[in-house]
View 1 (cartoon, rainbow, N blue to C red):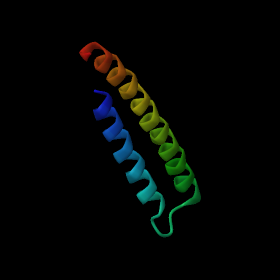
View 2 (view 1 turned 135 degrees about the vertical axis):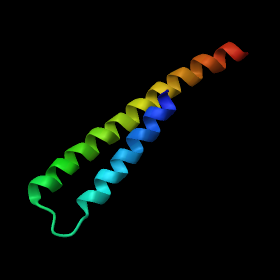
View 3 (view 1 turned 60 degrees about the vertical axis):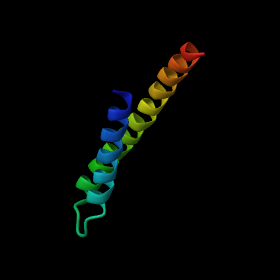
View 4 (view 1 turned 90 degrees about the vertical axis):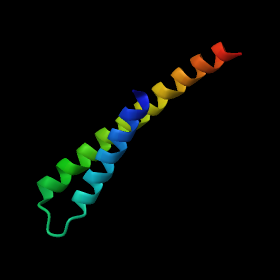
Amino acid sequence: QALERHRDAAEAAAAAAAAARTPRIAPATAYALGVLHADQRHEVEAARFAFGRIWRRVATRSF
């Protein structure tokens, strides 16, 4: 689940960044896409952190 969250957020961040680079985009739209991009990048980091915690917990049980 953490990896799926990470992938989905990374794809959404990339899509928002690409959309913000559209020529002649309205400033308000560019701003909203920037906010969306930042939110998705935060979600990427949160998912990465969650996966790290899960991985360490599983790895310590294996030994």
